[in-house]
Length: 386
Image (cartoon, rainbow, N blue to C red):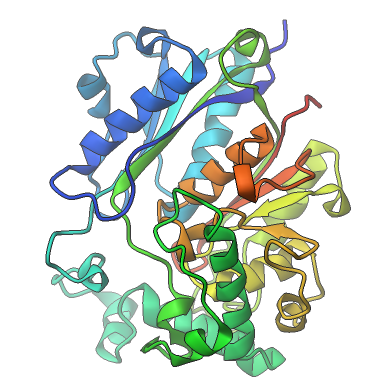
């Protein structure tokens, strides 16, 4: 009996400025879509893993909303942007051990409001932070934008990375998004457009920062045996790992210079029994252009400190030699935390990318990044069994 884990269903709701719906509603719809995509029945689900998001909008009560009974697995996972990868990892271990047979993993969000600027969607809580966070907040370091800007600035200071190099990532990913009918932003941009876009938190321009989206994404994890004869080709979960550096803002730490990808990437590749040179498609968490650059370095696609030169060498984009964020990523496609790179990875592994399909897609590397470089998850997926 082959209980090796596979992803057999993918559900993506309407995405972007879709108003009048709750995160829980999006999550329930995403699970139903994923079940239908797999060719299963909802009653066959015996495991459910949710990610609550920033607002804790989705919890284990989703079981009742879906009408699921007698589940063997039910939990809420929180590693922020690393949660999607973590959910698939825990689901894979549960399937392999026999704890459950069909597990739904879901994330959804609905921060956008009609006639309200998207930039306010993740505004800091009015409740004053305490302790050291209170001191940093008093100096203006409040929320993801300035904290990631601080990390990016440290990389720039240490290695000479430039804003134009960050811009090359934004331009390349928009070129991919132009080929993706699901992408929110499909109009091509130039480096000049990037440089002219307004400042958000220096060194980040608007086009360095991810989108804000309403919607939901779910995947279904089951065993290779159970996948036989289902509607979609199985995507095999060959390797996985997590890393939680815990050094953010610590004295003499590597904050901004090294991410959890350095640890989790090597471990996931080892588990899968492959090397970095075997990887065909790379789907990276890109809350900012900077996180793409540092992830490429830490996975080992280029030497540490040479990410800037690497991304401007022509390697990225549809005409480049490395298929990175083929759907446009969170910068141009949609922002569903770690479900953005995961959903595109499943599409690519299945060979269902249409105009954006990578010619080679036997091995897909997927990353998730959570907090301010606090958490990391890596998956290695393939249309082929180990």
